Length: 164
Image (tube, rainbow, N blue to C red; front, side):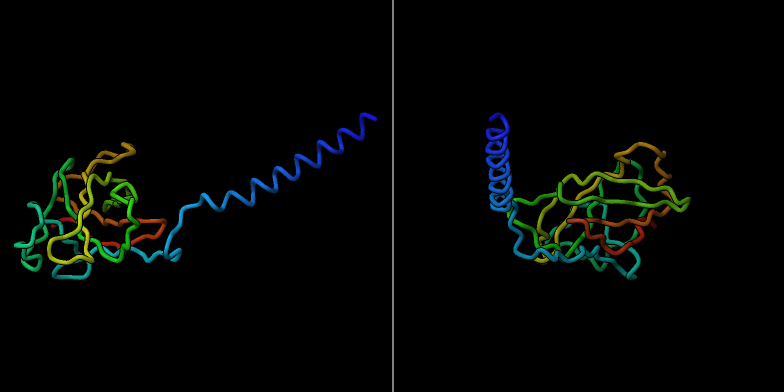
């Protein structure tokens, strides 16, 4: 007799698990394009150097006249990125910024803000702080270049040089 009740209990548990598994996809995030494109960091003067002016980019900014420059550790930098069709609730937290020094050391810089550029609605301005989130390596001096890369939804951008 005790075996009959345990069989019914097992059947109820299996039905419950199947019901939960079939309902779970209804709560999943709905992405209009599950094949997200890779972000692109826009370069200047050369396809290997990034735009990162010391002043805020605006409609009056001439991005073609921005000269590459070195940045002190802890500086705030604005990167121009494109090919990122954001969902309505996505913000700067969807991005990761990685850098590699000339010594091969890897850093991850925090993204602090994201806004649409004033001059092109398909280009975003991603603000970052040159401060390693992991704190493993000391940041390189402002005179050295960094190879910088942005990731979004697991897709990595092109690699550009940040520095002079």
